[in-house]
Image 1: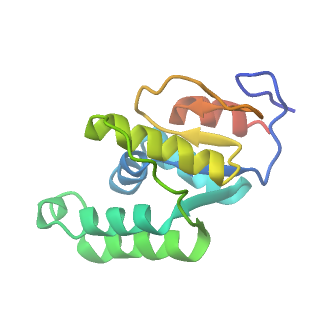
Image 2: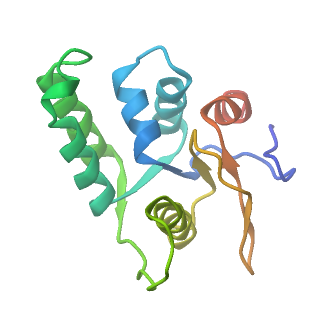
Length: 152
């Protein structure tokens, strides 16, 4: 049995949160680590997503500028796949803070993962490890996720 970055056992069926940029990469580049991590999460775990994140992803996928990378139909199919197979969780309340937009998005993503009781957060962004009062949330790159979960 594999272990995560904190030495805990990786168990199939765990809840996994992906940020929208990683999901976008997974959809647009089928051979990317993000795509392999997403496929692995769908087959071995439960992908957790919020309605606002799904809406944001659908909005990004509707942009004509993506037509050269992937057909509109295929992008709509990816959103539909997420809607059918992801566990849609409500986002936690958003406290009013004075942060940059990027910092606030990072805080919202981590807060969502904690509220969804996720076992891992998969992102290509650089986010410091997060420790709540109850537990540590593993924040993994797609490559780290593949390495840990593929052998679970």
